[in-house]
Length: 163
Image (cartoon, rainbow, N blue to C red):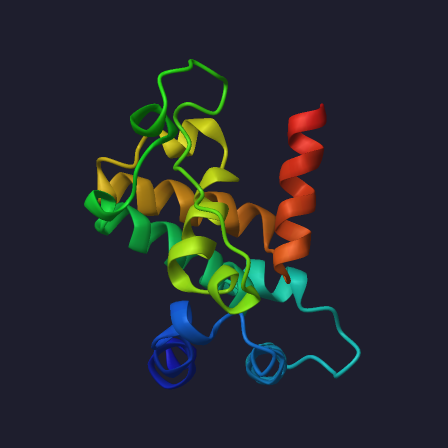
């Protein structure tokens, strides 16, 4: 309860805007330190299991949760691939990812939200029109996987697709 009232509320404020910045690693280190203090563990203890025991999402998992939730709540701003072209492909239900040449645009909320949403498992993406159910499904997925970075998230998705 103390963690959520003192640390979590501050950490998640505006996370969709700053969660992918280079300074987020400092906040993540503070989050790990706070979880170790709460559980009474030393500095060398891995936090992956601590996060699961405390039902806390690591910072990057919180960022991953926030972006698809934003996409779900603002669905009218996004286009599905089926709305852009009529060719029926396996990615028809995915959101259309616009061309982007600038790195700053690719790290922005709109582009990152689409990319992370498209990488979610298919059964979760089908719930997008019911925001409350969608958020619960994404949260459950992230609690079981506990991602520390976006690369780890995308690697997990690629492994699942190749199986």
